[in-house]
Length: 204
Length: 337
Image 1: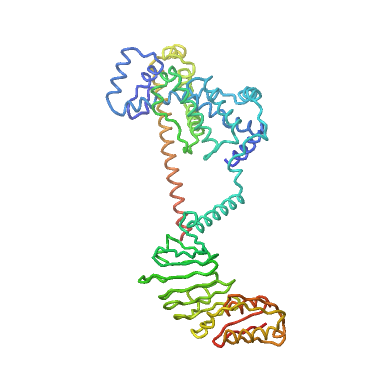
Image 2: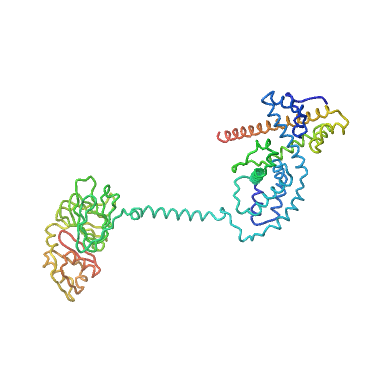
């Protein structure tokens, strides 16, 4: 974060190298975050670049009270939601999904992009651990947009087996993510406990 | 591959078909039945939908080529109008350097102090009074009467006067007839001391930096300095008190002396006359002792003309002219170097 502050100071003075470093560090996760909301590659790319353009042009005027990551995430989320409000087609397409997503609060210190990126990386690692056939079926279903019957035909297996593979994959990912949430909560609790012990030790 | 890890049955295949939009009417019926079976099921449905979305996003995430994105963005950056660095607005935080904050605090403090000190004047509470030839009586808020002689200046605070009866006499001669029956005393503030009324009417005369107080009625306290520990000289009716700033000394003239004191010179003229001779002449005329200390001083010659001055005023004029000191006592006046 302190490195981000230094880079930001350089960006104020139009240092392109510093800007490139920031861009390359944040583009992928910000674009992904925007795409999560919009489900449209081109618009997500454009909005993410708009945020960077804003950073380049107004770096001197910005008042950033949180980390740069949190600030950029907030900008991307708000820009994406504003775009959705204006575009009924996208809004309709994502209406169920968007129920859970709210505009980011100015005081929100969370780096949503990094948080979401870590979730995706975890899903990816779980996928890697799946049996080859199971992983292949998930990839065919999600990435190649193949119907279950088409997968069964292509792999020469019954449709019931395809359904079972999908069930195993989803279950594993769901359980692992749930465990991760518990682990994160436990970690936070442990940190607070350690901090309390440390403070008590210092006082004594 | 018939194993199932879930403790609760989730129809992943139906949810997936629903999300892909390829679900049949029969399958939709089954899905809806499952959704309505338990309040937890819609939550599980949403969980799977989010996971399904995340899997799609993951595909895009893995395919992002940041370097090529940067190359494209660079072109957009080049097209953007160049901003001269010198014209860039300086962030607010850079403007406020620590020393500037100190200066700002000091300025604010000074403004605050000025407001505090001048509050009464700016709010019109401080009343300035100026004496005129007519010597018209001025009625103070407590019904006391003040008469200012021509050229005299005084002021009082009408906001606080009922709590603290203070009149500041800045210059000249003033007569006070104080209204009594109040718990607070009446004080005339002077530059270096004060006159506190104990129940009277009196006259205060500021002569250069010295003070004369003549009690017309009752009792008055003349102080030798300011503050609660100031030494006070009590003056009774017809007594005259003197305060000399140079020595911070207090003295008074008795009623006998005062008779002489009240006498005024009737056109006296001295031309290149020795001081001891002048004082001898004045002693005879006013029937009051005037002692000149020191042979050199006695031998100094001067030309003077007096018309209508009291002896006290004449002694002061002589002292000023010769740049020497003087003092009044029960025995009379002394002039010395």
